Amino acid sequence: MNKAEEEQQARLERARAIGLFRYMLIRDAADPALSSRQRGAVVREIAAREHSGPAGEPVRVTRWTLDKWIRQWRAGGFDALVPAPRQSQPRTPPGILELAAALKKENPARTAAQVQRILRAQSGWAPDETTIQRMFRREGLTALAVPDAGPGRVFGRFEASRPNEIWTGDALHAVQVAGRKTYLFAFIDDHSRAVMAARFGFAEDTVRLAAALRPALASRGVPENVYVDNGSAFVDAWLLRACARLGIKLVHSTPGRPEGRGKIERFFRTVRGQFLAELTEERAARVPGLAELNRLFAAWTETVYHAREHSETGQAPLARWEAGSPFPLPAPGNLADAFRWSEHRTVTKTATVSMHGNRYQVDPVLTGRRVELVFDPFDITVLSVRCDGKDAGTATPHQITRHSHPKARLEDPGSGDDAPRATGIDYLSLLGEQHDRQSGDRVNYAALAGPGDAGDSVPAVSPDQDREQEDRGER
Image 1 (cartoon, one colour):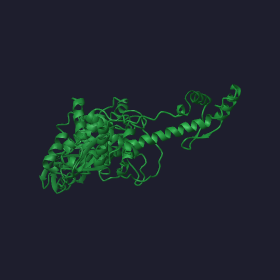
Image 2 (image 1 turned 60 degrees about the horizontal axis):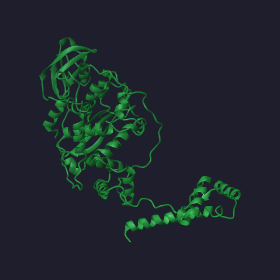
Image 3 (image 1 turned 120 degrees about the vertical axis):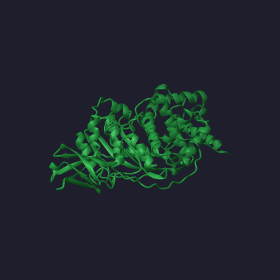
Image 4 (image 1 turned 90 degrees about the vertical axis):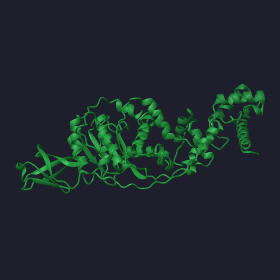
């Protein structure tokens, strides 16, 4: 007996057990010797009690159901009480289920929901998520799931009352691209869960953080609060200066107490399960650089994440965020100034200041004063000087030994590995093509800087400079 026959036999046995249960309930009430009044009293007494069902579970049966079963037994005997077996032929084509199983086997991190999305993107149709999950259990594929962390502490729930009240930011260690490890800097709106800023980089530093945050501020508006952890990039004085210039309250979470950070952590779990899970070593090896990785992520964000109803809010993240629009945007000049770096120095008796091995000449009237030097981290040959918060001219290069700030360094490339694939379905490329077809000339918030910044923008955070940085060694 094959597997299909065994399942059919099991269904028939369950149906007979149900028929026997029904007969045992009505056999006294179905006695032809009883009058209608007597039968009614017996039926009411049966309906008032709790009974042990076919599988041992407690059940109650109504009078109307008991009367129906009595009529069926009188008309057709015991066989009339046996329910028809459930549909034995699968409604989902076997080929689809085989493909779903192959997708799970080649990447155990994929959930049933993720496999369903891949099948729909591939063929335009997919079975229900529960159908796929049942198949996983039946085939023993649930054991392939990546183990999750154990239960942690439980904290109270909080949600901002309106869009752009709070942005929560963090960095995620991601995959290797072009032989180098990548990091995703992301900020989400606490009220809507919409992605405000997101960009992959080759380093977890302030330069890559600025590259993600500045375009978001230019296109999404300025939030009232920014909530971040205590990572080195988030505690840098540059971020505090930028927030202060734009009127943003910067709040750091207490070490060891992650209250308020659950939403960004949940978003990162979604990124791991739906985006990074598709970037296997072989697929990541075919990503030529950061530009393509960020393009694929923007496609996933706008095509999948922003368009799907969020389980907690009951709304699509982008639609919930847009409901609070319009949002005031920062002036281009103010935004450019906020994303410059600064350091303080005391002017010597010879009217010079030194910074990272370079020496500059300043206005002699500043001798002995404490001044603020404002600069582009990738070009420190030109400095703006401020004293007591007011413009004090430009520092003239006197002796230049380096042209960029030490923190604006580029990392050395690493190495990459390869691994085989099985199904040949490239889910991220499918999303990228779908996004290109749908978006047309829609603004890509994750990659565009604000207009009017060409003359005074910070190279670390503009799209053109992203490409220049890659040409200088980031690929």
